[in-house]
Amino acid sequence: MTEQTFDVVVIGGGPVGENAAARAVRGGLTAALVEHERFGGECSYWACIPSKALLRPGNALAAARRVPGVEAGSLVPAPVFARRDEFVSHWDDGGQFDWANGAGVEPIRGHARITGEREVTVDDGTVVCARHAVVVCTGSVPRMPRLPGLADVPVWTSRDATAASEVPGRLVVLGGGVVGVEMAQAWARLGAEVDLVVAGPRPLPRYAEFAGDAVAEGLRADGVRVRLDARAERVSTVSTADGSVRLELAGGERIEADRFLVATGRRPATDDLGLDAIGLEPGAALTVDDTGTVSGVDGRWLYAAGDVTGRAPLTHQGKYAARVLGDVIAARARGDEPAAAPWSRYAATADHHAVPQVVFTDPEVASVGLASATGERHREVDLDIAVAGSALHADGYTGRARMVVDTEREVLVGVTFVGQDVAELLHSATIAVAGEVPLHRLWHAVPAFPTISEVWLRLLEEYGL
Image 1 (cartoon, helix red, strand yellow):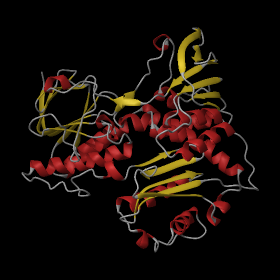
Image 2 (cartoon, helix red, strand yellow):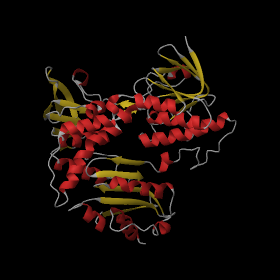
Image 3 (cartoon, helix red, strand yellow):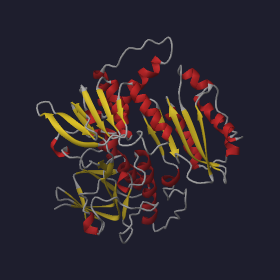
Image 4 (cartoon, helix red, strand yellow):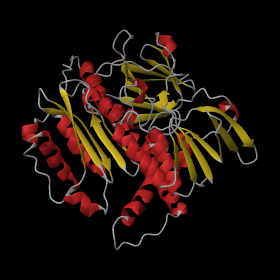
């Protein structure tokens, strides 16, 4: 049995784990990064990167068609897949492995389990001990619904949907969240006949209502059959030869498809981490405070960041939390107790107030903070994005914007944009929310003419400035 010791041991070599390890090294500590699959993680190979690579060509083509004088043809799947494959390095993590070495982090391949206080055992028998901290950054896995017949049929998860290199003739997507709507549109534009089954009255239920409605309209424009308030009751195999399935809905309707994508959410990947050895529940989220310290464990040696905590399950937010806990661990290793005041470098305060997120459909949805007013002190300001910049951007540009204002403090607590190419507006909104910029000062942030950013002026005018 081999035994190694580092100041910090990070379990999970995705973007979140990479940031935790790198930040610890930056703070003067040694760090090991243990990964059982591919260094670079879910986002690099099966989520954010490949999904946007699949969506971007269709979005670009649709944008070109909205400008007179541009002759636009159709999507050719093979080059789209080839470009996607380049972005995911053909699923080869050699570059990420080399990055870790270059950053002063020791990469270790294998499945790690916590086997004691500050002790991790890899499946090859190697015991890796931590002088100061073990950090869990294992992300999340698909949450499968309790659907009769599901265990007996071939299923696409998000990984299959982003990695496939053949367009299915018919695709049924179960779930109206981000993965569901993005993959429904990507594959519809690549030539599949797509049915999207949504349990509620609109997709994207966690966003402003107008966002879900606009995305549903955009999907229908691409030929997606959007089935709202639809409840799946059973799925069965039509043909074992080609993997086709039949989905039965409440009311008796049946949908047959060549591929069945289940996109019904994700859950923390903590099933096989050895949490029971330290008194925590396997499969549950790791509850952390704003420093990333895991609750319910004595000694402040266990930390976690990213999807595994359930706080803000987004890659960029997990990386942010990892940077925070890396600084906290380094400070505590020096014998200092960091003052984890809100908005300091030692507290992931943004998780509670300013979480930016983008849905890369057409139209895009970009939001930060509250989606709607939650009390009497909040006021919603809604308007169409109808400014000179948007009119020049695309003929017939349609979009909508909302800002949620704390009327007592006169600061923004939420912003949502829906429309073509609104993702690039989001960071300005994030700065305004995170910085608690007073509206009277925001009034002096003059938007350039003619850009879609002019909507900021219109929102402030609608508020009454």
